[in-house]
Length: 518
Ligand code: SF4
Ligand code: SF4
Image 1 (cartoon, rainbow, N blue to C red):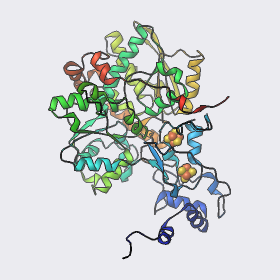
Image 2: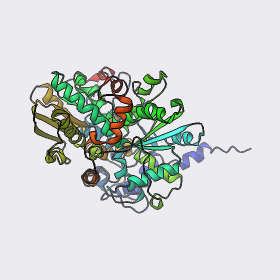
Image 3: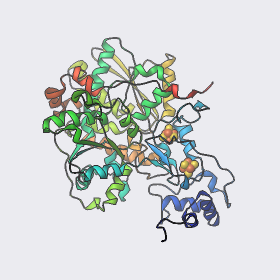
């Protein structure tokens, strides 16, 4: 009987190996070859201008220079590579080394893993799609098919202004309610909004900042919602770990609340809840896997309970929708489920660089003065925009001048962190986001321009600021569901229960690689 498996010869024939790719590309000129693979049939790169790696712009039939590629740890839970698609162009090295300053910032030999902050920026720069997120869509499909499980999903602020690009819509189109409709169609039992827990994060982070200022605590306080940034700090600047806010990210805060507050309210066995998060970020996969992200296990005394069980990127959600033959554009818009979905304009802008800072400043002002913030704090221009490093100083009655800084992309973080270490800057609060531009350009977002372009970042950013402008409430503490959750369940911000469930700790990861010698 003939085996249904192909013979080695048949496999070899079908395999588009790196060598056969080069041979194929050589026949049609390399530049054309790469463009075709990148762009699909029509040769247009959505949102881009036909960019190809520089070395392929030269006429020729074989690359004269192969630049190598980043190493990827086989145990990396965020990114992986299909070696058959890799053309050794070196674009991943370019972004990892020059934009994120990870590769090249450690010495060989490796110790126990390949240093990586899981940011996924290499997935956005790889021209052939060889590097991608680790695909977890099967896990979600299995959970949705299991009638004994209660599958709850949350969606991050930045996914709603990018998902449409996977379906031919304009970059930055806000499809918040279509995204909810698609999730309902896929069969999720409840759909909550991470924008809600962005407001929750602000309540905790602003309270923590106030406590640090009043009690001569460690300053500046660093934001902690970007897992790529947190890992970067743990790896390269572990001596600054005390500066990191202990507040968990909005994703893990909501994950904890789903398995505690929501489970109690609805009388659902938390061990039957599968908590799924749709994120613009590959590093969220490794954040969810951190052993300490198990807040609900404290309340229920069940050590195996995770805050978030499965993270899908925006791209994975798009694949899931397409594989289920759901026509996103013909769906009727649907609303989030109540309890944990109301959000302020401040929560909505968490997805852009400077957004967390602006949101925190508004609420900190109220916490310090007891008064509504003045109008300029609703459009804090010095921290808006795509510049990699921004600064602002504000006079707040009662405490005087508060100095803040905002930084995105880890290449920009190094000079900021070094200025702090040398005592050259005395900021009170610094926002860091792992990816240039913030979550709108996270490593899990649609690859609408190759490499990522500021034009697309700006369109997505504009969409989130527009949500803030149109919001009926623009201050996290005015969110009525936030007020209820503290009154009925959490107690005070940074109080005992809030601390138990919504805060975390960090670890020195510099011990896992050899520090680069000066
Ligand atoms: S995920 Fe980020 S840190 Fe890791 S290899 Fe890619 S660019 Fe470098
Ligand atoms: S960017 Fe992609 S194709 Fe180029 S070397 Fe890296 S993995 Fe290979």
